[in-house]
Length: 287
Image 1 (cartoon, rainbow, N blue to C red):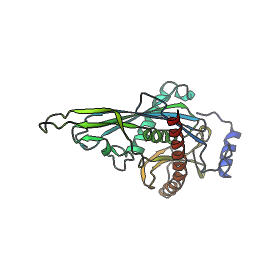
Image 2: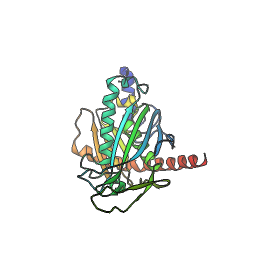
Image 3: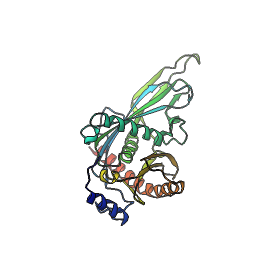
Image 4: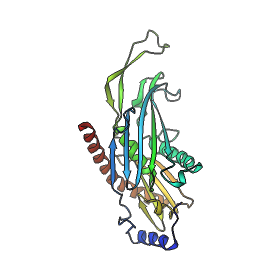
């Protein structure tokens, strides 16, 4: 936890009440965001996102696998987050493991619609190759390099950037003699299909401090929160997932208001993120 004096706590809470935060931002303003893509050559796609002093990396690896018998026409996606012990003192020992598990589960819910898969932001049917027999399995790894609050939003942005940087090899399927046989596949070394990220949402976390809520909270601001609501929203304004943190309960009317604010804020985040991704990919092509 961030160690703050009583005066510092009052300063943070008072500033948020006055719509002027410690770093000069308003309640619903993000810190500057920067994106680098293609930073891990051996991955199918990768990106690094910096949100203020929060610094995270996401990578995507695609491997051939077998679809689940319950969803034979879809591929599979696994998300795992690792918190580097050097990113924050709290990550040393068990603290990092617990937060890693919490962030992985929250991203799974936000991007894949939980266990049911309803409302999934990643189109799993696009990963199917031969129904019931072969599909792509995507392994998405996130790494927290430096932590200064709002990790979930930063990781969500890094995953969206890494997926937009992901090329999946083209697969040619040989016609099999019988439907029971496992079909033979030929994976191209030269032709790649660009992963469609148009439906992949961004995550907007609203952190409640006192009577007000803020976006993109720093570690100091998070230490003063009563609760936080993370809403994943795609370009169409559809909500793909909700995650709540903090011990304090939220009135249903407050949750409705927070999701409405998150929808409004998500446009600003999506526009900034997409322009940064385009700029990063242009830099990558030049180099």
